[in-house]
Image (cartoon, rainbow, N blue to C red; front, side, top):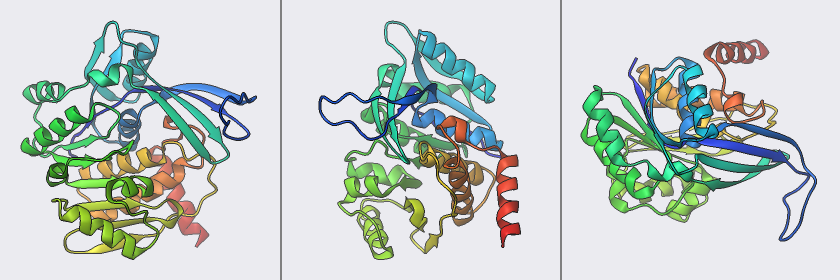
Length: 309
């Protein structure tokens, strides 16, 4: 199996459930407050590792209780923490999450995440064999450094998976360095101006990004499933019907599972079908990392689907 290298964010999630989202100046009574490990980078790393992948993480935490707890959690998940920098004088990143029914709103304090730089990847590259490994990154760190890191990863013969979330406009040139772009409907709207609901929408989004150099697009559509488009084919993957309890981290579950499957040598469509199953399992449980399944859970879920048929 190929190694997976995650270059990204590490957060502590402070979550609370509310009856509805408060308006300006409003105070609500909530409940079910929890403190848990999060960050899109961390979630994707944990998702891949729980499935059995070998994962190295490149990131930054503050020299504080949140940072120390994050490192402990990574070690418990069998993730290599050697290349996570601990920095003084800057707090570890925090995400404040308000949950209402199956929806959520998130506010981020990037903290130490803002100190992650492409030089951290270069340092990793000088100490590890990176050729043919799979590189994953997101947009919860400084965009300028992420762009540099993607270019460096591609130049180092790594397969690059990019999840531009939270979404923002990207430099056109970056798409040629991305092997697999994974975006949801909101991210697609920000990147292309199109909110996808149909196959024609998906094709138009790909056409725009292909013109900028992109090869492979994975467009996730929630309950509508996903669309996988390459320069030679387009495939629609149906969603797996489940009773959703909490969608937090579903996209990260998908990306971690996609990377795991590609690391195992699966073709892109098969990898996306597997990722869809893993993401579906994640929404049946509360929390981000708490909801990420092991391979045993995935196999059990697949058997239940087969038996149900």
